[in-house]
Image (cartoon, rainbow, N blue to C red; front, side, top):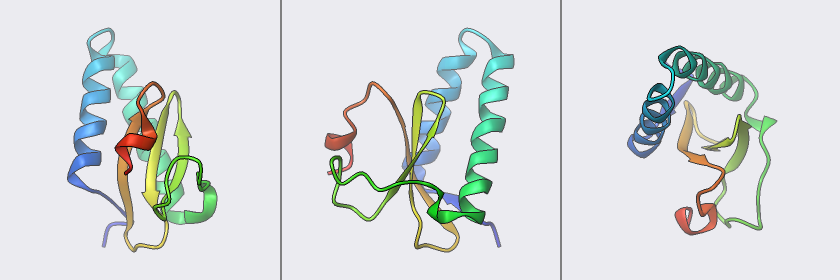
Amino acid sequence: MPRNFLVPEARKDLTEVLEYIAGDSVEAALRVHDRFIEIFELLAANPDAGHFRADLTTRPVRFFPVYPYLVVYSADTRPLEIVCVLGGAQDVESILK
């Protein structure tokens, strides 16, 4: 059984991030991809590693930074559910409503 699961929206978010980076450097996109995979595994093993952001959402999700991005996940699910991957310039509050 996998230790983490990216919901379709999160998979789409991650693909968009990696495609954007690959537009400048495929090598950099591969490094960023590897880092995201490391973080997903870290969060699966340590679901309390992230933090709540009551200022952004009342949803029971946690946030964990990866470069200028935020991994949003549900710590109480098994496998750990990655809800979305957001860029720092996005309106996180609106997206998570």
